[in-house]
Amino acid sequence: MPYRDKTPPSPETARNSVYSSTRNLSQPTICLPGSLAYDVRLQMEGLHLLAALPDDSIPVVIFDPQYRGVLEHLAYGNEGETRGSPRRALRQMKGEIPEFVRAIDRVLVPSGHLFLWMDKYHLCSGFQDWMAGTRLEVVDMITWSKKKIGMGYRSRRVGEHVVALQKPPRRAKGVWTRHDIPDVWIEPVARSGHTHRKPVGLQAALIEAVSNPGDVIVDPAAGSFSVLEACRQTDRRFLGCDING
Image (cartoon, rainbow, N blue to C red; front, side, top):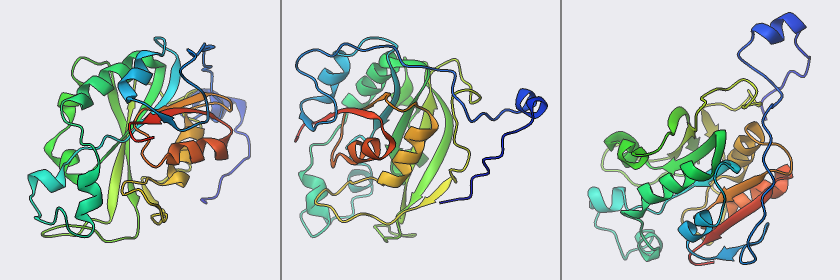
């Protein structure tokens, strides 16, 4: 873990700095319908979960869409073989992704964050169409180096990317409170039965950066439920689901 200087800044420095170690945002109280519950693995459609939430109510959503990306567009030809088969078996999202993003935009509080996972193909080919009709703006990106070599005709993939988007008003001071998160995060892939498991440590750091203890963190496509683990580590409440449970 990087060193964190806990020495408080002088009042003058704090006034002039763009950084802040405290948040001036708080989450409104949410009344969940009876079909939903915190801190459990819900089996349901993610769009149905998002539809049940009120407007402007959630500080953080982490979304890891299951898109075909590299397998479909670069045609590696290994579907049904070794590492291609688990990925192929997952239900793929196509037209639903923009619908998810619009629903996430609706439920985020002002200045709330969406952390959107994507692979190199979508990062390079463009994902702005997914944001059409929303107010979300890209504010940062972090590369996850997982120390495991993957596919590639030329360079071989060893990482994935999480794009940070913010709902207006766009600001960091008083909203983003951790300033020790590097833009390349090294965390080995955890052994898991899920082919798309994401790093608990990185997600925990991001959750800490833009929410308060006790806040609700939403994951509408939870997969391995790594976000649930990150919430347990950071004293946040998890609300998430996956079509496969």
